Image 1: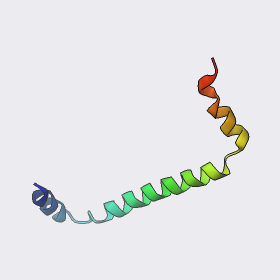
Image 2 (image 1 turned 180 degrees about the vertical axis):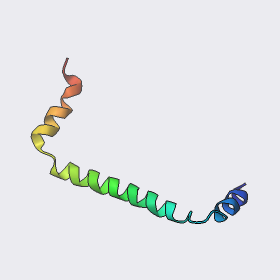
Image 3 (image 1 turned 45 degrees about the vertical axis):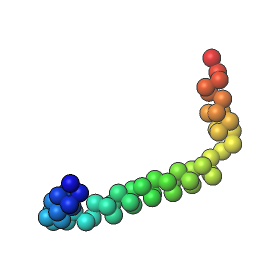
Length: 55
């Protein structure tokens, strides 16, 4: 089954760019998320963390 899929994918021209694009999107998302976590204001984090407990 995998050989059939691999053979079919190799016949498509220009398909080798898609794994690179998806890796770039994945990596940039987590870098931005990591940056946001360390630069977020403490007051905002405390406010958002107490929201589920408020009625």
